[in-house]
Image 1 (cartoon, rainbow, N blue to C red):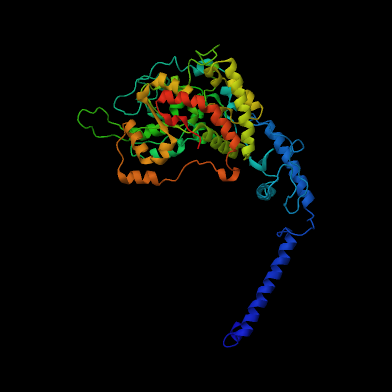
Image 2 (cartoon, helix red, strand yellow; image 1 turned 30 degrees about the horizontal axis):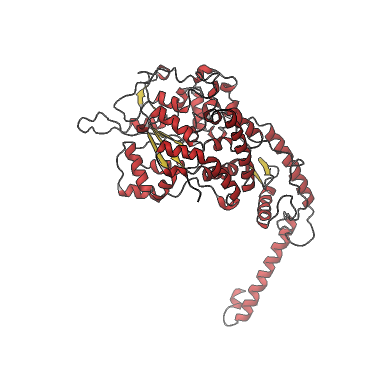
Length: 521
């Protein structure tokens, strides 16, 4: 047939092709209609399944939210659909034009996109979250929490008694603090090589710690641990908020019989870099005693400001502020360790952390929610400072728990902005020689110089120009997305700058550097 249409009769051939195309389209349209593929996205008529979808959405939401309330970690108290300020009034092919507290086209568009996704998730393993000031979103159900493990059913002080540990005798042939199990640490009497971090990147959260770590791990003398930060000091050993860290590697260590509350467990987290270090025998040069020059690190940014359960630990009982913190524990097990800290304007850092935290856990993108939380945080800490010392309030875990119970999600992060309090502790414990502070602005504008200075501080070999180019070519890491939420409200920014100013001035005096004033842009 085709042959009869070829040749000079182009008109007949064109008509034939058009006819065939129309036939295919009609058949496909009828087939799609029969199986319900096409949705009625325009017009006033509502499809028959709209009310059914609305009922399923409401039922699924209430069922899922009820289950969230029973989750052991209870990161947030979520209302039922009836208690929420959101009310589903009209659903026309997932097109909502009337939604309480949604007042602009951008938010309505976001609601439409979210509901379209949600329509595919009804009946699945999803949890619906919402907030007074922002759109509906959903996240996955939390996995097993560390606090559900039998280790954490009761608090045993002996498990956390680090300060009474006998000092570990490290092998001088290793640049990194390493030793053979059985030589000096009887609880790891297995004859294997064990190592602890040579240096820590301890904070501050949302100040570029991930970005710095990702670039530094490209150094030829670096052995990468199982993850950037184990969060063992601030979280993991207490079973606190570590859902995402219950991975196969951690569980395998527990299955080997290690108690996650004890230092032996922390040491076991570095078995992978210990193996890497043991295979890196170097050629001695002159009188250099070092035979193994590879090192490893730990980079949990919460170590700087999150001193969980300090009031229950041995030596801190019945005190208003701690005698021992994360810093003393690190110093005790690794006396010569080196510490890197990045600092950022505490106001912009807090908003960045808000965007990151709400994106990961709650789906609550809104500068208005941030403004509301900041007001409560400032009022709570001002009230505390009128009654107690600055240090007591900064380390007051009860205050942070009360704020969290009111729905304030940034109590820990707000606390991290008191830089001078923690820096005084660090200087008292480690001294200037073991500390390398970095301003985030310097890191961004002078990245190569900062990296070379960091490697020099760590006594690591200078990297070649080629390696440095590779480090600098890496894209920015762990950057918060401000486009969705918008910029911080001016009134919120002014409140925070005013609140943090005296503490920034203390930091200027402590560091002898006016850059720590972090002037308002």
